[in-house]
Image 1 (spheres, rainbow, N blue to C red):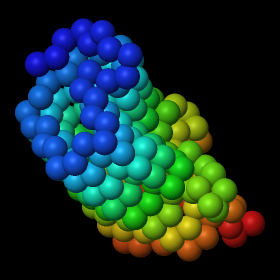
Image 2: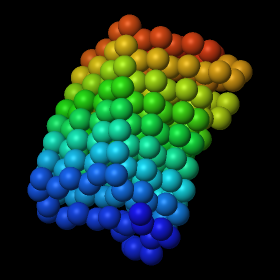
Image 3: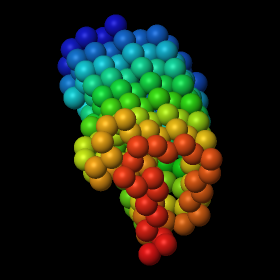
Length: 217
């Protein structure tokens, strides 16, 4: 257990490390990131509990390839899982993310990841959020499958927000549910500059707008 982490970057930080497993660790009341790994490949983070952090719970850091992030519980942090620059070819599954500002965010070249069977609940701003970017740096070719995202954001909250010049994203068989009033909330937002965004067999309930696709004008 790591308590009151007094570290600048991460309570647990890996740099240029390969084939590292972090299991059954609790990190709480941290001022930095909870667990962060950069330029580190084949990292496994499994069955950890991170809660009450000022910054990012799990930070899949710059250039990290083939991360496996599985069966973790993340609560009351700025972001649950943050994909950094070039976090690619990873598997993120069976995580529970509750009461974070954002459940997950993806940005610069965070591509070719499989994100499946996660629970994201009561996010303050949004469930899954793309951080934009032009075609060269947008997070392409990510697949979101069988995730459950409930009660995302305020009155204009969005469960899944895909924006920028992002291409080739698959959103399939997810359950997106809003149990509060619909207000101006959106299930899936698809920005006007995106390309080849596939939304198939999703259950979307309780939103004012189930899918807002700006590509259709």
